[in-house]
Length: 190
Image 1: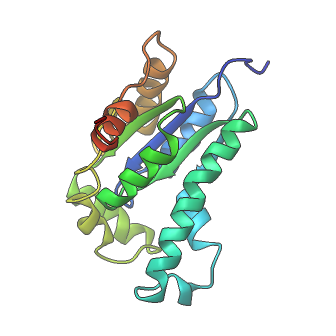
Image 2: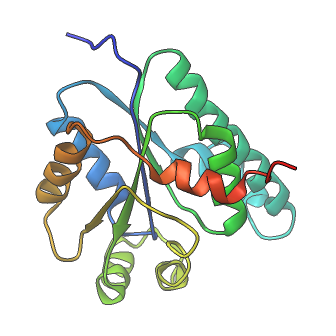
Image 3: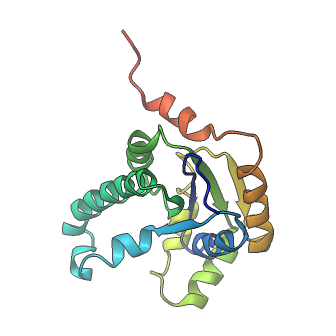
């Protein structure tokens, strides 16, 4: 039975190969309500020919696509969908854009952490990632974010991480990280 409550968004931020997609798939199994998985990689990289996703001309298209991605989150919520959002905060500008677009929604921000050695091993084992991107993102992906929930996929199985996220999301607690971030960005009243 579907809930008649306000849709919930669980937004996972982490470096490439940290396990966000695998964690979202596990959350779809354990959560008691249906959740749509809105994956940034599918949205960004599968919508344009690769020549438009390279540095240079791709930077403006990436910025426009990320804005559309954040706005699609709002559209899905307005249609009644619970969402698992699988993304990366690669810069302060992206955090700012996301928070300003979505601050009034019921969003749990989840930091998906993973040791650098494990990230690099996964990146190489997968073979479908740009070599070195995991290392680059390891040092930057969490710098500008705040979280309601933190998990570490290098030290815990995806099932345990998903169980922890479910326990917090279904508890009486309320998400506050996006509001704390928004308070940093909102203009000070005169």
